[in-house]
Length: 85
Image (cartoon, rainbow, N blue to C red):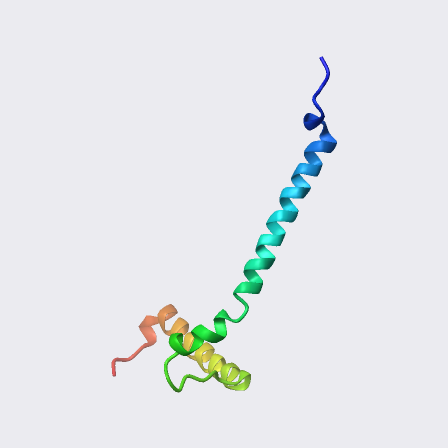
């Protein structure tokens, strides 16, 4: 009994590579089609006046948050030393 040509390992590899190439082409086409989508959708997804903060502002805010979390952790770890305000 001889194996059919489609059942050989080389033929299966070629078929898989073909399918992979087709999938890559489809993904590339989808990416190219959606390239300007973010620019067109952004006016509807962000509120008016929305602006990103600078990296310096972010780092500063993160430091403040970290200090407050540390203080909260300390208070939760030692509730007996707390006074009621």
